[in-house]
Amino acid sequence: MAGTPRAASVLVVDHDAVTRGLITYALRRAGLKVIDAETGKAALHLVLTKTIALVILDVAMPGMPGTDIVQALRIRPETATLPVLLMTGSGDYDSVVEGLDAGADDFLPKPVRLDELVARVQAHLRTQAAWSGVVEAELRIRAGVVAALGRLVIPSSPEDAAEAVVNELAKRTASDLVAVLQLGAGDQLHELATYDRAVGVRRCGRTLPAAQARTILARARSGPWVDEVQVVGSADAAPGIASASTELSAGAPIYSGDDLVGILTIGVGRSLGRSPLVHRAKLLAAAIDYANVLSTRTGSAFADRRDIAATRARLRSVVTAGRFHPVFQRIVELETGAIVGFEALTRFDDDTPPDQRFAEAVAAGLGRDFELATMRAALDQAARLPADGFLSINVSPGFVLRGHRQLRQLVAASPRRIVLELTEHVPIADYASVRKALARIGASGLAIDDAGAGYASLRHVLELRPAFAKLDISLVRGIDGDDLRQALATGLQFFAFKSGCRLVAEGVETHAEAETLQRLGILLGQGYLFGRPERIA
View (cartoon, rainbow, N blue to C red):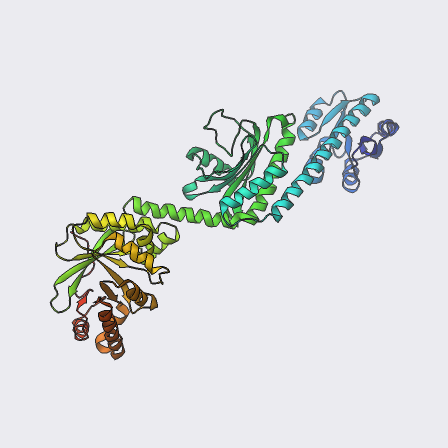
């Protein structure tokens, strides 16, 4: 359809040839292009094959009533908004009501006043032309925004990505409000970035109140939405959902595959409220288009960040709820079985292997929290151990460097000798800094774990000169019947002697292993032969 009434095509549908002819003549005199049809079936065929701007339709059509024709037009997407004017006789008002309910736009009583008919047709065509212009302009704007979002370089950080997206939408749309919200652990919603005309673009990181988050998430899981905003004129109004200048707000879900990972909300101001239905449709369509682009461009990053947040929440609950406990294993003289110390180990209530759980904590950025909590629990329980002997506590090199003040406080508060046992199996980049940190901590000694298991542990012995080095269990297991293991253990014992430290054999389970280790000059050991790691009763 062209953009002016003069070029528009009007379809006149009436079984009465005289009436049809008069209407066609009047419309053509007014400069309109007219097509006519005698039956409903012929009218529907013309609508589908010709460019029709408006339909004038008699209600009392034989074969296919006018109301059926209206319904047939409305169920087809391509004709759902086509203007329809009904003509009715004086006794057909029930049919008029039925026709309007079916979706007709206007009606005229018969006999039709031709001047009134022409005026109404022209008014509807002007409205339709104006609406078409609005739609075309809106589609051009949205296509430009979608293309811009498609070209946008999306940072890997969800906060950075959200800020970049909000910046782009703020520049290219007339919205008063834009927000990107991310789904977090436990159905929480976090504001990653927002735009408000009054304050501009800002990164937020704020968690929405639980009730508000539940409402928004319920709507998002049901699909896109648009609604009037009930603005709260206080600081408690939720940024990203409402602002003082916003009247309509639309939201659309952001997906990673089939997984809801975020929500985009956009809003328009009160100055746009003269045509609320138009603006509701435009706003909802824009939210859907932009959220679809974000699903493709940022969905996976949002999903990764959400999963990390869920993992962090789960791991934090392990620490805060104390779902772990220390156990202690004896370190003894191999010859006499006399206890010289204890190694503190951690067990988790859900039976997750300690190495796995600590690795999860490190990956989630909670490694230091876990180390500190488990150390405190071990030191608290160790007060009930026999007074003689040192206590060996596992610690990572990273914690030695960054948590040396906390370690110093823990060591100073303990009445027994504390030996710090380095747990990592990777090279330390800066041994000088580790040595300085260890000196500040003031522990009674240092132990290196898993000696003989790799290059890193031997380098640790050379650079840090520990009091103890733990002979790895892989070398101890079956050493009594393996000449190569015995040869390697002998070399490591000589290496330890020259380094000024004592070897402690880990994982000793049989008397034969213990006797062989003594014969090789290794005097200390721990393992099931001397006792399993146990809780203090």
